[in-house]
Image (cartoon, rainbow, N blue to C red; front, side, top):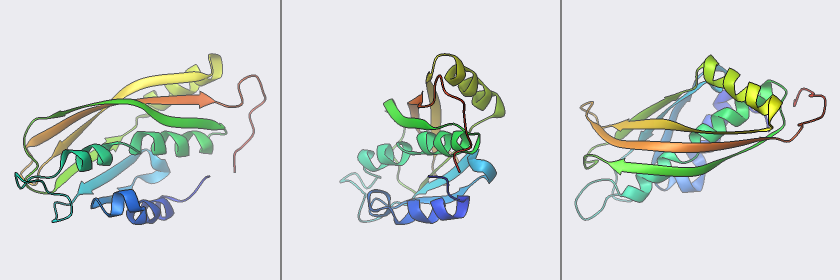
Length: 161
């Protein structure tokens, strides 16, 4: 479903798995080429070490590359199935304050995905996420492997909206 940046921002803010973990979408960039996310440390997601629970951090990294690619490619006439195929996380420092991350998808990455989707029908690639505390210290490094399937391979593409 194609939606506006503001509509998806609010839908994600109120989506229970993110809302109750205090994962807050600050904004989606124009055309869904980026997203800024804040993971708020709270009584609901801190562990016995007084840092953000690792599951909350992992949940924060989970959906965003897939959402961005889905919205970008739909706007370009693709009918796709997008999901997170795998992920790897390294906790480098305890998240004792709120954590912040930004994802940006470049025009080159979009062009690469389009080319592969138009030729083989399946695009799989890993993308990094780095999460920082309020002092700008790197606390978490994640690699998300995104899977995208072109559901119209072999057909003429039509605009999805």
